Image (cartoon, rainbow, N blue to C red; front, side):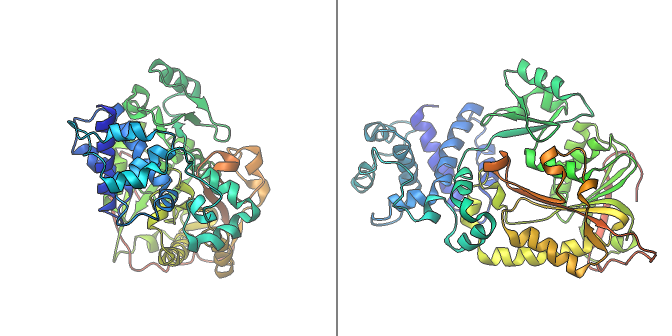
Amino acid sequence: MTPAARLSGAIDLLCAIQNAPRRPADATANAFFRERRYIGGGDRRAISTIVWDVLRGWRRLQWHLKDISGDISPRLLCAASLLLGGETMENVRKLFSGERYAQKPLTSREDMALKGLEGKELSTQKQPIAVRLEYPDWLDSALRETFGNRLPDEMEAMLGTPTLDLRVNLLKGSREAAIRELRRESLQAEPTKLSPWGLRLDGRQPVTATQAFKDGLVEIQDEGSQLVVAAADARGEHRVLDYCAGAGGKTLALAMTMENRGHIVACDVHEKRLDGAVKRLRRAGVHNVERHLLVSGDKWAKRRAGSFDRVLVDAPCSGTGTWRRNPDARLRLTPEDIQELVIKQAQILDRAASLVKPGGRMIYATCSLLACENGQQIDAFLKRRTDFVRLPKAQMSELLPAELRNKAQFSLTPLRDGTDGFFACVLERVVADVKPEETTETTETAVTTPVAEGPST
């Protein structure tokens, strides 16, 4: 595709994203490219780069274009992003040539709005801080509660392009072997600093097309997510519950740390997500996992009260820690979302807690930056459940790096750790000479679907 055709494709994709404001942009992009299979891999990456640059700079672009009359269209946003990224007005006009596969020429209104941006920078101290750092105005106090005077630097780091992290599947080979296999396909991967299984690549890379990925030697997983699994310290003799498993990313890593022994139950309320885990589990060579669909009306949880050595709660959250990857999420998040999520997280914690055996551990994790979803959520839970305590620091997993091993709970940020934003806390259920408490869950039902041969519950 020509540069003009790529820009035209980016404008079309941005229109599709705007027309589905509650749908994640990556889901819209996946559907967009599936319907246009003639667009090659390199062109897809180029189109996506243009669109994601616009999404990352959304509030700043709107600020630069605020004085024009009428709507700020995807055409204007893409053109403004190019100009504020260093492109000249002459070249931008050429991209809107009206020739085959190119956008129609700029109107006089568009040209007038854009030509004043040439030579300017996207960020300026004249912009309000929430505009310059691309977060909602209403979230300012919550972010300041988390970061204090580090807010500008931390949020500046959230504007950057994320790295591409992989987890080596030790069931299939070593980190060194994975580096060699990727290098054969011209992908230069480096070991991550914190995760013992992580590899890092720069930018967008065609990892899923590599033989290492197809053979299950590597999986795409942010380093922070890998560290949540390390904190769980799941072992081969354990019964493990991945309570909000989704498509099974952390389930796969848990199976690896357990060396394909023991037993894992991967639960979720979304059947499509669990179905998506099947192919991944088989590709990874995992056979100690069963899937379990939570629906209304069954007593599955009640019958398994107090039976798991490890319960991982990767709770639904605001996703504020993933804004580098999902910049459109900043635009969709509302105060009502936060209020609903905090209530839901507390309910999930209470349900999951009753499944932990005395002496077992519950690992609560989010990809949120907000205290109300993280430390404050744990503090409130411990007031409700006096049979749980934060795990003593001396008992934290040896799989964690030294700087995290002495903390019963930890947070990660792009600025400080080079990962997505994550929070994790390890809780232990106190051993007491009492009968396991029955779960309060009476409105969930389960449909169990074995993924591969192995014990069933």
